[in-house]
Length: 363
Image (cartoon, rainbow, N blue to C red):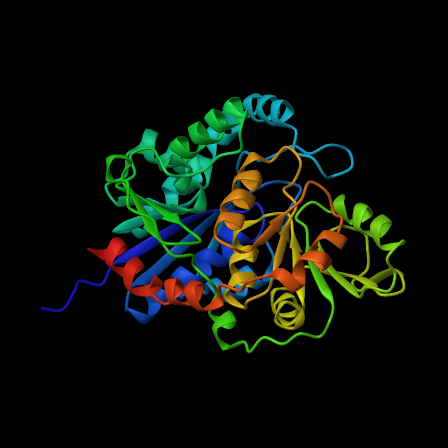
C-alpha cells in the first residue's frame, strides 16, 4: 500500500544560517519522497536579514515574523544574557501577537505536520493554540536534554536556562529530533530521537582540496576586529573570513593576505572546499560541513553564548578539532599536522540521514 503524501509547514529560527540550511535540506528530502512543503515561517530579529539564498532554495512561500532574539554588547561580540531576557520580556505582548501570523497560515494550509527548527514562538504556538497537526522539533539543541550530553563545568545557571528554552520551543512536541555529530542512544522518556545532521545537498558533490589558507566564519561581526589584530602579527598566513557586517564592501582587505567576504552560501562552500583549516564561532552547521569534508576545525564560542560552548565540547569529543577562548589562529596552525580526520566515519553517519528523517516524520 502506497504511503500517504503529507503536507508540512516549517517554523524556522532565523538567527544565523544553520537552522535555515537544515530546513532547505529537509525540504529536499520531503520533495524527493513526494511530500509537500506548503509554507515556511521564519522568526527573525531587526538586526539580521533573511539571506537571499534561503528564498531561492526553500522554493515555497516564506513569511517572516519578529521573534525573541539575543542582545549583544556594543562591539557586536558577546551575548548579554540578562539584557536579552529583559528586552524580550518587555515585548512579550508583541511577540505573542505574532502567533496569529503562524495560526493564519496553519489554518490556510491545514498541514499534517508542523516542524519547528528551534524557534521559541513556535513552541508557544503549539502550547497556546494546540494545532491538530503533529508537532515535531528538530535541532542540535535537543541533545541538551539527553542524559549523556556533556556540559561546560560550573555553569549550572546557564545549563538550566538553555534547557528551559529548549523545552519551551518544544511544548507538546510528539518528537524531539536531536541532530548529533555521532550516533547515540535515543532517550525516549523525553521523546528524543538521535539523528544525523541535515547537510545541504551541494556539499555532497564537493571534492576537497588544500590550497594553504585558513577559512574563518563568525556570526557576530565584532570578532572581525580580533582577527584583523591577530593577523597584523601574522601577515604571512593567507586568511579568508566570512561575516555579515553592515556598511562594509564585499572582499574587504584591511591589509595583505586577509580578505573579508559577505555571507554567500556558494562562495563560502568553495572556500571551505579549498581551505587547510577552519575557524568558527562554534555554530553546529558549519562544523558539520568541515567534518564532512575532512577539514580540521578550531572553535571559538561566542562570548556569553552557552549553546556554542556546548557545541565546542561535543565537537571536540567527536574529533572535529580543537576549541579556544580567543581567535589565536596560531593554535589551529600548530594543530593541523596532528589532526586525525573522521571524514569516513562521519560520512557514514550522514548517509543514514534521509532514511531516518523520512521514517521519523512520516510514520
